[in-house]
Image 1 (tube, rainbow, N blue to C red):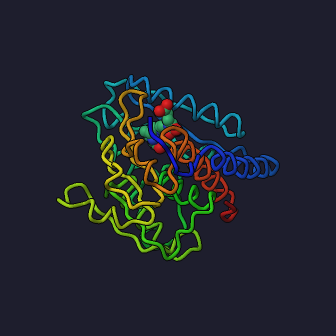
Image 2 (image 1 turned 90 degrees about the horizontal axis):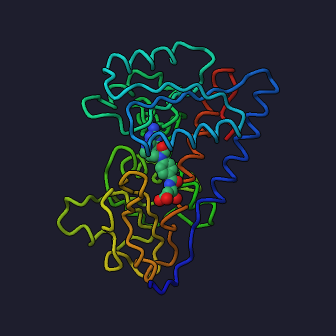
Length: 293
Ligand SMILES: Nc1nc2c(c(=O)[nH]1)N[C@@H](CN(C=O)c1ccc(C(=O)N[C@@H](CCC(=O)O)C(=O)O)cc1)CN2
């Protein structure tokens, strides 16, 4: 059993606060005669992915979004997938589109993503949205990086001027998070270092961090000896074994961290809330409304 002294940084209340704002935004749109719609696309038979889609559809219904859904068989071709996305792109009643990953081997997720209208990309992963992030232009933010910034802000963890080390340089988390937390904003504005596990002595960097974000996708890679005493540790990176979550941060890090996200109920629920924030943003922009959230 781990003797913990670390303060926990749960994601549940952060997600609730974001979803409450989204619900208000949806109510405003509906009052103006617009039903925001988030379309979802699932390819293949992965039961974990089907479960996540169900969760998102339930959440969509609760918030007042329409949520048209297409499920393609695992045998679908790249052209079949592009055709579904093209139909959603062309449908003026659909504001946001989500392609659940992973998709079956043999299909190319990145190519499919690039056929989406960047303004419908609710995961914030389209190259145009990544470019907007790099340039500090408005656009859909990648959900997990945005979730981490929101989680730290909600729990009053100061970020500005502090040494943040991101372990991992992946396109979905490490790289965009580094760009986000370096931006000039009260909840960001940090000195950010990105290090990856291919660097022989990566712990030399992580031990320096006042805020350490694990974004490697290597289960259990971050252990107490990699963490500066009193640091804030954020578990962003995960691997999935079916629906089982295998986080980067070993629970024993609670012994040395000053604050830490919980193994379950940390960044994950905030990531889903960010998806709906991006969907609302997409719907608002279609009707000519500026960003509210
Ligand atoms: N198009 C997308 N595909 C996928 C995404 C995504 O953001 N966009 N993320 C994951 C799956 N996923 C949502 O789709 C997701 C996974 C897990 C959680 C979550 O909150 N998990 C819990 C822990 C669950 C447990 O271990 O029992 C948590 O972190 O507390 C939310 C969303 C891949 N595909």
